[in-house]
Length: 364
Image (cartoon, rainbow, N blue to C red; front, side, top):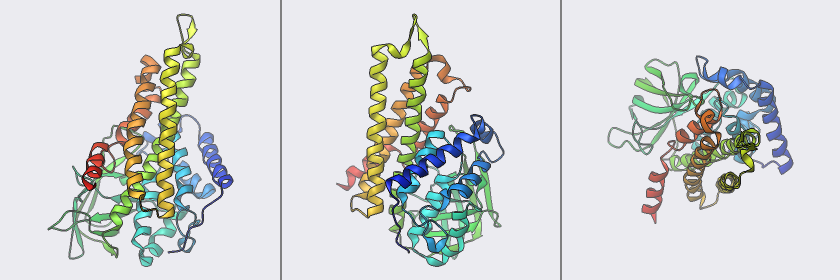
């Protein structure tokens, strides 16, 4: 693999501004239109961000058609997309599927798939979890054929390529990596009803599917989860920050007893606590991403801590936001309820916080 080069702080700031401007130009109704579309994704926004900003290929080495920078630049984009709850396959395609292929170290698979993913002309997703456990795969690989079911596949219904984490008939823990086209014979994709309408999920069933194996060692799955935890935490930071901004803006305009409610000391204290949650979350999330980029020995522990802390902080912030918005906060018309739903759903991805804490405790 080609070594990645980090961008400067000024370049990352410019990248953030570019992404935010593209989202702003899409307008306030773009998110609602996207989640009501057949694929539940904003296809136009994804195309624009890939073509104008190159978000899908930031972490992809130049040899495979990407920008050849680091996961820190991708994190900056993910945070901005989290702020907007953008319904696009950034996490599924540009982080999970791309990350899995890059971590495998297999040049053949990377040369075949990554250029199209980096360009944005094709989208991929990762088939990982079984129905009840992110530590187990619902897919079994036997003699080159895949069978079984992967649950909670993010953006599964709009993916062109499936990257599959599989176990064996004797041990369902992740052990092998595979890829196959989403329209291959024997693949059935079923859109799932979701709590968070801004994050589509699907169930993917494989029936004797001939897939291509990606040579890799089983250690990549721990590194892949580390990456997933860290980038998801950054996304949660962006969304929590936006929820705080919406709440502050609302309390500056909503009047009660002849005064704007934001002037009440008790509410100021609650919003100060929300701010503290957002900023401490940002610190630990970016510390985890930095540890991954630098290859730090404590990257897994930092990423696990970020997943736990940011999940809980995001839920606290959005819970307070709903309360401070009053009755309007639980209506479909107001976006704050979408942030609340995102907070609940993201805490379930890649292992619930209490499960991660238990695993960390057991490893001591």
